Image (cartoon, rainbow, N blue to C red; front, side):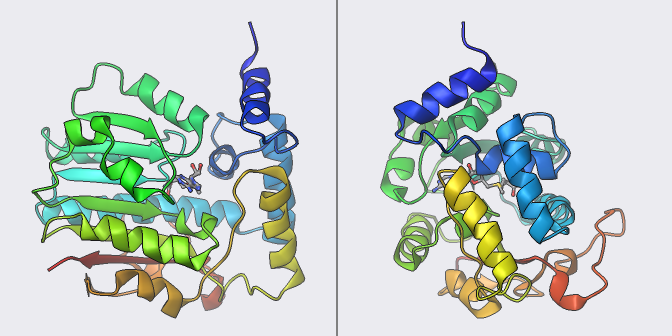
Length: 280
Ligand SMILES: C[S@@+](CC[C@H](N)C(=O)[O-])C[C@H]1O[C@@H](n2cnc3c(N)ncnc32)[C@H](O)[C@@H]1O
């Protein structure tokens, strides 16, 4: 019987990813202080932190933004969520937040990482209102047509589409913008798009530090990365009505006094842009 880590190596080798022992999902888990990561993930994550020591702080701020955005959507009547790039289950999962507010809320988690999906399915065992599937957001049709997605979500009614800290793992603009456009087109009026995205303003593309951090993802994981600037993040919301305050730093998007999110000393150290938009 293979250990968890051996199984991951075997899985990566089968996927043609030998030599790419870390994953973005488990590195993020490490940034958040979680325990669902292996030495290869910790090694890769530490290399990123060497370049940008604020990475763990940004991960925590991102998670807090996601919680605030989900609560905002619930207050505005959303009862179904499609969470793409959902990651390893961690405290304050979308279905937990949603069920605190509305016991009939429905959630589908989607991730490219089979370990993240397996762990999500484990905690959702027996839950008829939530599930997880393994899929790639660069293939929106496969997600929208997936029978498990169709069994939980009703696309005739509004859906909260969540793309938190994932679009920067789709560096090709055509796939990132085209994918979001296709997903939003499939949603009923009254649906919402939520995005958070690593910011070029905090991680300048031309800087050596950014190049080194991106290189860690390219070399050690199956997902490379690319920061985008405020305007490029706003472009994901073309045709949608941005909710106040528009595209803002994670900590500035409708801050909640109960959150412990740290506000960076330097305003351009916000790390990620965050926004929510409504489909009219
Ligand atoms: C930084 S984590 C974000 C997790 C969660 N959304 C959050 O904000 O807390 C990014 C996740 O996106 C997933 N991911 C990366 N590229 C993806 C793709 N093309 N399709 C689906 N998931 C992807 C990774 O496996 C990882 O779990």
